[in-house]
Length: 309
Image (tube, rainbow, N blue to C red; front, side):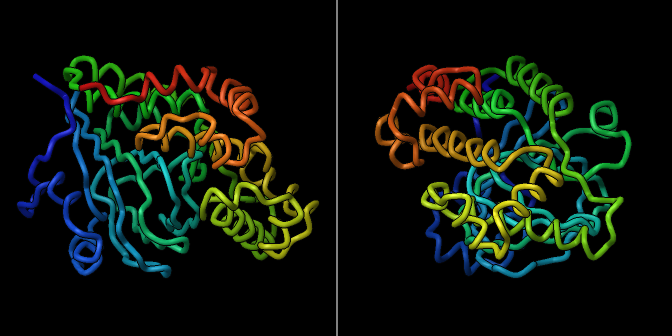
C-alpha cells in the first residue's frame, strides 16, 4: 500500500489536491477554505497518525478566529511565516520551528507578511503526544535543529516518491522523537514584569516577521534590522537570545538554509543561484553554513529532497 500524498476527500467533500489547482483569487474568496486552514495539498496516513501538507491562502493581516483545536497536533513550518495566538500565548511561526496544540485550545492566526506559507501538521493520539510532549509548562512555540528539519522534509519527499506506510510510520516516529528531544522551547519571561515580558515578546515577533518577509530581508545588517523594529542592535540581540534561546545570527542562518531547502523542493537546483538569492558570499559559503546547520552538503540534500519519477 503506497503512502504517497493523496487527494483524500475532506469531511465537506473537497479534494485536497484539487484545492491546489484552483486559482488563488477563488481560494481567497472561499471563506470556508480561508477559515479552515487554507489550501490543503496532501495527506499521509501511517501508524495511526495523519500528516497534512498545508498551503495557506489566508490574506488577513489581523487575527482571524477564534477557532478551537480538536486534537493533538505538532505543526512544523516549511516556508513563509504567520502569527499564532494559542491559549493566550502569541508568537511568530517561521521555518525555524513550529508549535503544539491540545484539544480545546483556543487559537487565532494572522498573516502580517501575506499568504502563501507552507506547514506540515502531524496529528497524533493522546498517548503518543503525552509520551513525548507533556511535561513542565513551556511555550507552545518551539525551534528545531537543522538536522530535524531535513528529516521532516525527507519524510515528505519519501511520501511523494511512493514510500509505503511501514517506512512512513517509522520515519514519523523518528521525526517526533527528534522534535521532542531536541526542540528549543521559547521562553515566556515568567520572571519579568508583565509589561516588560510583553514588550520583549512583541520585539521578537516583529523581528521574526521582518526576517521572514522575503529573502531580501536576510541581507539586512544588524543595524538595519534593529532600526526596522525600533530597537538598538544591543537591545535587540540581548532580548532575542533571552526569549528564543538562540542568537540572531544563528536564527538568520537557519532561515537562509531552510529557504534554500524549500527552493530545492520547489525545483531550483542551481546552488550558485541559491547562494546569491539567500545572501551567501558564494557557493562555498553556502556549503559551509549548510554543513554546519544540517550536517550535510547542499548537493546531498538536493538528491535527498528531489522528486523521482
